[in-house]
Length: 223
Ligand code: SAH
Image 1 (cartoon, protein in one colour):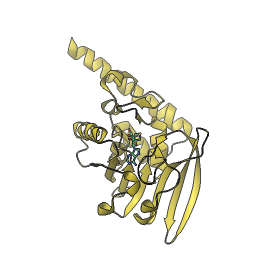
Image 2 (cartoon, helix red, strand yellow):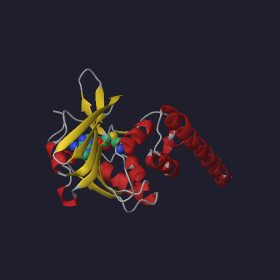
Image 3 (cartoon, rainbow, N blue to C red):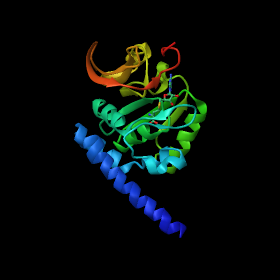
Image 4 (spheres, rainbow, N blue to C red):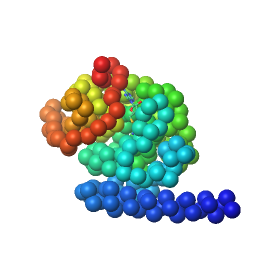
């Protein structure tokens, strides 16, 4: 009986995951095959609180512990696509939260370091990543605005929390050709997702649109 109910839920979640890929990602313009394939493989239900498993593929952020959220799937896809992640890239994921985005980047073949301000969230994410087969993702607890000098340089630094400006240590720890994707606080409850690409000593910057994220804390975060 329990088993039948379990496989019924599995079938439902598979169906929802397909719908997420087609309706919430492809229909909105996500084209990078690596992003779509990765999100088709990572079981998002393992990264949300158990009682929300049925809603894991809904088109919205969901609450996790400590007042934080697991980002809307489209936002994870947009960030991954803008970050131009290729297999073997060294990626710093700032704001581990549930660990879901870190798993997606790892499923795209990146070598992922993920850093989370709230130690308890880092511990929960570590367990979820292990249970879902992403033991290779490194999770640290600490202030991600300082980046992670020991593992630098990074090909991509991708943030899931909004700051006042790009933290200076991120620029120092970005490889030539590297990308930063982060939301910048613009006041009045809205933020702008931006991408920075380093070309030698120059930086190209583009605007990816209006978004809403939780605040980035720490030394170079929001006061
Ligand atoms: N990528 C996550 C989204 C989590 S929400 C996911 O897929 O679930 C953003 C997270 O950023 C929160 O967990 C918050 O605690 C964390 N955060 C905020 N400021 C931070 C900082 N300075 N360093 C590291 N993490 C930070």
